Image 1 (tube, rainbow, N blue to C red):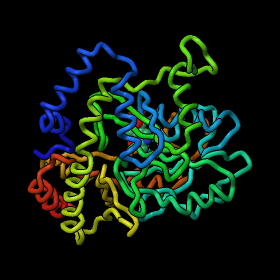
Image 2: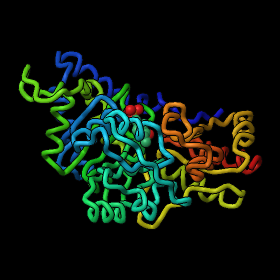
Image 3: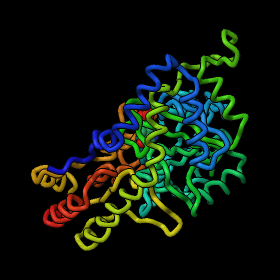
Image 4: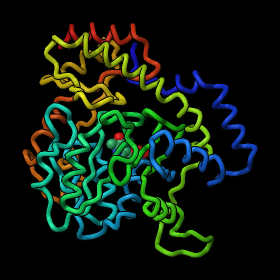
Amino acid sequence: MISFLDLKAPYLELKQELDDAIARVASSGWFIGGPEVEEFEADYASYCSAAQCVGVANGLDALHLALRAMDVGPGDEVIVPSNTYIATWLAVSQCGATPVPVEPDACTYNIDPALIEAAITPRTKVILPVHLYGQPADMDPILAIARKHGLKVLEDGAQAHGARYKGQRLGAHGDAVAWSFYPGKNLGAMGDGGAVTTDDAQLAERIRVLRNYGSRVKYVNEVQGYNSRLDPLQAAILRVKLAHLDEWNARRSTIAARYQQGLADCGLSLPYVPGWSEPAWHLYVVQHPQRDALQKALTDAGVGTLIHYPIAPHRQQAYAQAGWTQGAFPLAERMADTVLSLPIGPHMHLDDAAQVVSRVTANA
Ligand SMILES: *Cc1c(COP(=O)(O)O)cnc(C)c1O
C-alpha cells in the first residue's frame, strides 16, 4: 500500500524539536501573537527574500486580506487562472469583486501570459497568477503586462514554498505573495495557517491592521477588519519545519525525477518544466484520457492518487450565478477530466516511487 501523502512522517522525523517547540509555547502563556509569530514572520520573510511577512489564519485569508489591502472591492475585476483551487476565486468574490478567468498554457498548466491582455478591462485591478502544483508561473511577462496597464500582481504561492523562478525564490516577484500552511502543503502546520510576503511596507501594514479587527492600537478601530491571526503554536511548529523545507523539497524533486524518467514512454502527459523553473513539486500531476480507469486500476493495486481538481471553478455550483456554460474554458475543463496526481512527498521512499512507475506503466 503506497499512500498519496504521509502526514505523520514529518512529525516523527522532527519529533523532539517539535515537541520542544510545542512545550515552549504551552509554558509561555502567550497564545495570540507575540514572539513566536514575529520570529516566524522574520524567518519566512528572509527565506523568501521578501522585506515583510504577515502571518494570518489560513491561505484563503492571505489572498483575501492582500486583495483588500490592494483596495479591491465591489465593481473591480481580478484576473485569475481558469484552472486553480477554488480558494483563488473565492478570495476575489469575498471582496465583492469579480474573478475574470484566463486559460492556462497547455504545457505548464499555469496562466498563459499571452491571453491576459485580452481579459483586461477598465475595471481590472489585480492579476492573480497561481504557482499551480508548485511550478512557478511565468512572472516576467505577467509583471510587464501589469506595469503597462497599471495593475497590481498578487501571487498565490499556496503550493510553491521554496520554488524558484529564474533562480530567485518566490516571495516578492509581484506586489505580494499569499501563502497557505495547510498541513498537506510543502511547508505545513499542524492545523491552519497562512501568510503574505511583500517588499511593500505600507501594504504589509494594511494587512497587519486588517488581520487584527482593523486595529493598530488596542480598542481603536480604523477600518472594519477581521480576526485572522497566525497561531503562535503553529508559528513555533512552522519555524522548526522551515529549517527543513529545502531538504524536503529536494527529496520531492528526486521522486519527481524518478517519475519523469520512468514514465517518459507510457503515453501519459507528464509535467513540463521550463528552463527557468525550479518547481517545489507540491504535486506530481499527469494527464491521461482514461483518467478514471487509470485511477481505479492504481487504487486496486494499492497506490493512492488524488485529482487536483475534478471540477473547474467556473463549473462549480458556487459560481452558477455567473452563467458560464460547459465549454467556456475548455482547457480548464479538459484538465478536470484528465489530471491525476501521483504520490509524492518528502517522506516517500524511492522504491515506492519505482513501484508507482511499474503500476502506472502496466495500466496506462
Ligand atoms: C491550499 C490552497 C489555498 C488555500 O489555503 P487554505 O490555507 O486551505 O485556506 C489557496 N490556493 C491554492 C492554490 C491552494 O492550493
